Structure formats: C-alpha cells, structure tokens
Amino acid sequence: ETFRVAKVADLDAWRAERTATAGDLAAADVGADEWNFVVGPGAYFYNHLSRFPVRLGEISHLFVGLQTDADDVFILEEIRVEGSLTLCASKATGEQHWFESEHIKLLLKGSLNIRRYHLSDVNKRLVFPYVTDCGKSILVAEDEYKQRYPLTWAYLEANRKRLSMRNKGQMGDEWYGYVYKKNHTRFGMPKLVVPSIATGSCFAADLSGDYYFVGSGGGGGGGYGILLEEIDISPLYLLGLLNSRVLSCYLKMVSTPFRGGYIALNRQYISQLPIRTIDFTDPADVARHDRMVALVERMLALHRDLAAAITPQSKRLLQQQIALTDGAIDALVYEL
Image (cartoon, rainbow, N blue to C red):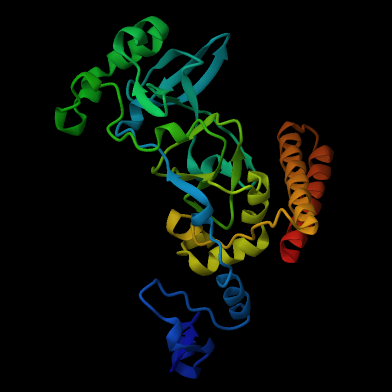
C-alpha cells in the first residue's frame, strides 16, 4: 500500500550510511501518468499545488516555434536600418544584403533573447514569405513578391537552388516557402513566450505580436508561445503567476534537470503548471487580479527603463525597484 522513495545526492554516502532525503508514498498515487516523487521538505508544497484543478495547458494554446528547414537562408543577422530598408548578414551566402524592413520579422532565439519579463539583444530577422488571409497562412504569390519586395525576392532567387533541394526536391512552385507550415497564424497574435531551456521560470510578453521565434536550434534556440483561450484573466496576470517563485519551484520539481542548474521548459512540463483562476463575481478576487496586473505592468516598465539606463547609479536603483516589485508579486502569489 505504500513504498519508500529516497532522493540520493551522493551515491557513495547513500551506499555507506543511507544518507538521503526519504519518505513513504501511497501506492495508489502511482498510475500510468509520469511519476514525480517528491519527499522531504518540498513534499507538502508539491502535493498542495498538484491538487489545483486548473493547469496552464487547459486554459491556453501552447505552440512550438517555426521550422523553416533552411535557417541559414531565412534567418538573418541585422547590421543596420536605413529608412525603410534593413541591411542583414546571411549565413547561406556569407554576404550582406538589403531587405524591405516591413517584410522581415523580428526573431527570437530562445534563451538568447527571451528573459524573465523582458526580451533582450534581439538582432535576428526572419524572412517570412506568408500573409494571413481569412485565418489561413498563404504563401505570397511570385508576381506580388517581385513587385512589393523586390530586394527580398532577389535574395531568395539567389538561394533558389538551396531552397529547392528541401523536401527531397519536391518543393515545386513553393520552393521559397517553408517545408513545415504549422502555427503560422499564431505568431502575429498577442502572446507570452518562453525558451525551451532556462534556470527556472522565464516567461516574457509579446503583447503587440511583433516577434516570431524558432522551434529548435543550437545555443538555446528553441521556444514556445502561449495564447490564452476562453478565459477572462489578463495575460499580465498569467505572466505574474508563471514568473513567480512558487511556480518556478514547482517547475524544477516536475521538469528534466540539466548541467549548470538548467531545466527543460518544454510543453510537457509547462502545461502542468497549476493556475489560480479568478472568480470575477468576488470583489476580493477581482482586486487581487487587478493588483497583479498593475504590478506586472510596473515590472515591464522597469525592465524597459533598465535597458535604456546608462549610468551605474540609475541601473542599480532600477534593479532595486525590480527586486521590490518581484517580492510584491511573490507575496500576492502566496496569498492566491
């Protein structure tokens, strides 16, 4: 009816003296789902949050980043912007090319750009040869492409051989499109974003829908998007919950650990995060929701100010204000 679990940090010490954090668990709690055994001081905390009825995966759509099958062509490094044009470097050609600024998208590379509450050092651009029409992603027609974006089309033509070889050479007339077209229409929507690997909770907001991101890649390249579905809570309320110390600790208990204190933030893990919903008929609950939104708005503003700060003194002051706001968010999450 019960079984014993030991969390062993030092195998030699455990063999010699059975030194480990251990505890008894109920056999009835073990089923076909994945096993997360938590014993010791964190057990009550884990069990309490595990009983929350609502999970992130139930109130949102979690979607993976783009897969172009030719990142060296479609992903560019921004050099400078002049008027309506942007100069970028291409890995595929080893050269610099001019592009129409309105056509190439801002691109996030996972943990390189997605930080807790903010996006930083975004210097990548994406050639995204699609438009959204009636909720569907449509490849821009060749004639229209040549007329509206001649510089970008010339670049794609220069890489035609490379692009046409994808999908076993069966790209046909859509040789300049992506092999995989999943989730295209979701990137331009207001969303939260998260890298696929970090040292804890690391969620940021893209409420303007300006940023695109890739689904995989070396150097922390991957990421996920989060779109709220059929629930009245603000995305900023959700952002405060997700970045809280409480849910960061929970993530570390259910996720896969890596070297250097990193954990996986893949969909299978973040979808399990317990979400405290709001009863909008209860004035006290509404007040908590609105206070969270106000605190997160302040946090986002402070990070914008910190990115623009120049002097060490102003940076230090802003970092202190960020820490205080972080503490206020954590206190509210504890209350919730």
